[in-house]
Length: 355
Ligand code: HEC
Image (cartoon, rainbow, N blue to C red):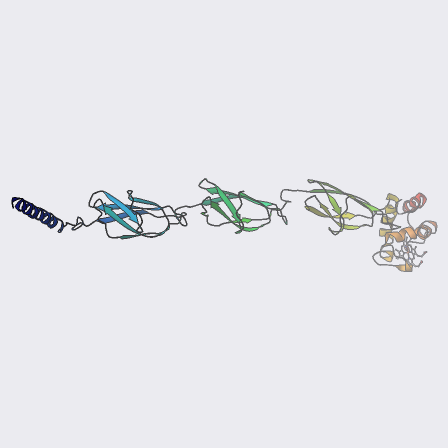
């Protein structure tokens, strides 16, 4: 009986103990009750097309937190790096596992060229007239690695554009991250290759014979002030390498000298008829005064006119006969002895135009 009582009381005690333990665990305390975790964020925006944005999280109240982005694994760092543009859900969790509400953070891409100003300056070489030999040399600032484009063409590494004709060109530069300058307009103007060239023309001529008329005059064009000359006597229609023109009639010639660059000098040059010999001219002068309007200035009494010098040469013997041998001309009376001698001297010299 004693044994039974002992066992019974032990059973009761155990029951009491078990009962009292069970009673303690039925009313657990939630550690997150009354806990409000707030988060604030700061952010660094990514540049366009790149994953270089970041979000930095600050949780309050102070404590030991871990952090999650887009419901991912919690990490100890409060900084999320390598983020592209987009909207992210951020949460923080304290040491007791209590979480903040989700905070939405939007990262907007920033243009990497914002605040970048590329300035162009150019120097240029003008093309010569009708040629594509101009050039544009571009300098971009600030210093850096640039490529260059002309007229919206492909970008090239050289900052020099060559072989350009006259015209207006738009120039742009692009830096290593693709930021471009504004377009700069450059106008190339033709330069005359003849500017500063002063060709000096020194023509010399020889007479063309007259009575009879022979086209044996000549023209020699001396030229200086440039090089590579060619020569024209027909106003530039045809050019020749020689500066001598032969077998010319007495006339005015519009000569042109052209140099290696096509620069020209023009001038009218006269190849004169032979002016006649001294004795001939003495005879003619005598006749102009003594034969007067009967045979000059259109007068042609007896069918003879001496306005054309060659008629004097042709009629030399009739003049000699009428004025010297017969003395029947001029009509008003014969020439004096000395006047007759002027005619005789010419006749004896050969009665040619050039005598
Ligand atoms: C006042 C006018 C007059 C003057 C001046 C005159 N003549 Fe005549 N000449 C004539 C007449 C008229 C004839 C036609 C009649 C004749 O043949 O006599 C003529 C004819 C000629 C003839 C052509 C006939 C022939 O013989 O072949 C010659 C040549 C000529 N004259 C030369 C001269 C010379 C040279 C002078 C000047 C030194 C001169 N004459 C001055 C009036 C003139």
